Length: 58
Ligand SMILES: [Zn+2]
Image 1 (cartoon, rainbow, N blue to C red):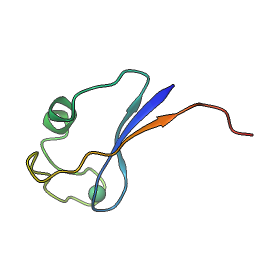
Image 2: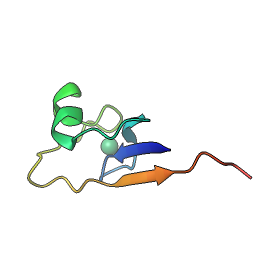
Image 3: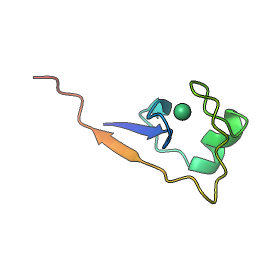
Image 4: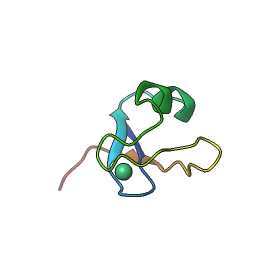
C-alpha cells in the first residue's frame, strides 16, 4: 500500500511512501511550498489528496 499526498494546484506528489504521514509534517518538510510549481501551500487552504495505491500495475 502506498500513500500519496499531492499538490492541489499542479498534482505533483509532495509525499509518496508506505507510511501515512500527516499533511502538516509533509508541508513543513517542503517549507510549505510545492517543489514543482512553487505554489505556497497554506495548511488551512490545502486540500489533501491521500491516495491509496495498491501497488499492482496490471
Ligand atoms: Zn504544485
